[in-house]
Image: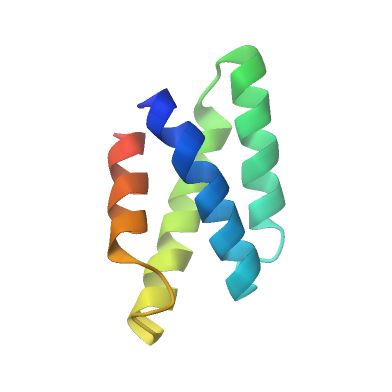
Length: 81
């Protein structure tokens, strides 16, 4: 995990999830997990919620390629690896 990149991409992903109104409470859960990670350095929740977010964003991109930028998805995936 690349923490510096995640600090930039997670807020963008949360904003995109909220804007597209997908994932129900996933945006809030991802935000909470990120805050928890910064406190206890346990990446389990961040990784799990991030993978769900990636799946939803990919589905949204398949439906409408302009809804989610390719760069956002790539940056998010790279920051998790």
